[in-house]
Image 1 (cartoon, rainbow, N blue to C red):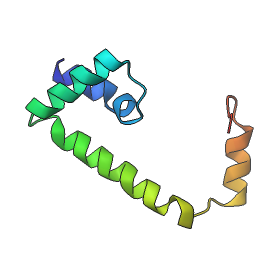
Image 2 (spheres, helix red, strand yellow):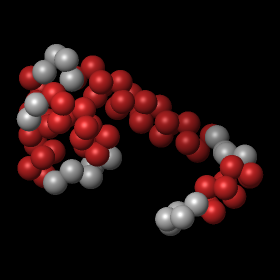
Image 3 (tube, one colour):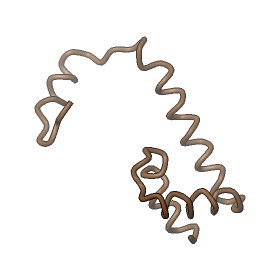
Amino acid sequence: MECDEVKVLLWEYLDHELASTDARALARHLGECSDCYPAYSCNQAFLSRLASIRSTCTAPAALMRWVRSLPGYTI
């Protein structure tokens, strides 16, 4: 896997949405590429921090109504 492809697929990888063969190839690339690993590490840290504050923060009611009104909202 090349760096350009990793940049496109990184969020899918972090969200566990890639096919297993693609996920393995991307993980292998991250293990070998000093250019791509920092982006992965930063995005992973962001997701971890977001998860840690998720239960302590609530969105304003108006924002939640707007999000729920969007086409395709399913939660």
